[in-house]
Image (cartoon, rainbow, N blue to C red):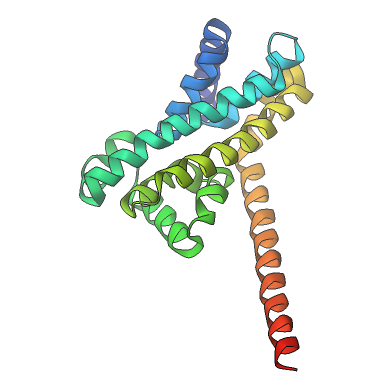
Length: 212
């Protein structure tokens, strides 16, 4: 069943992008960021395949993906900001937002603060739902938009680049997309932990030097 669903989604994605071009990429990525079941792991690799054929540029598809993701995220952010958690809980299931997904995104946002707005764009599950706790917490719209765009651009660039490398076999990576997601998430976790630890130790050393 999952295999047939992925096949159907892949056919829809490829038809939309082939027909609409860059705007099609932007629209699909906007829908993905608005919590619809359209995985970016299908959208951007196919766009990358079309880069390998010479139809698109790698920068162009990455920019379109980032713009679409940002637009979809802003829409969800605004709904959460002005509707609050009660609205999300009441209607969330209709757009595939489960309580577990919402809770995971909220915990991540509360733990990492503003940095979650950037990191959340490239971490599985959190990526699609981080706009909700950001909106409920009324995170500054300017910072939200900037971090969302930068994170989405890097994510779109990575997936499109992989699709460009695989070429006509772009769909091969789809079954392994979740594994790739978690590997990236784990790598980012250790990278952020290393950066944080290094910063704490640096501050401690500076404090000791001042005391001496």
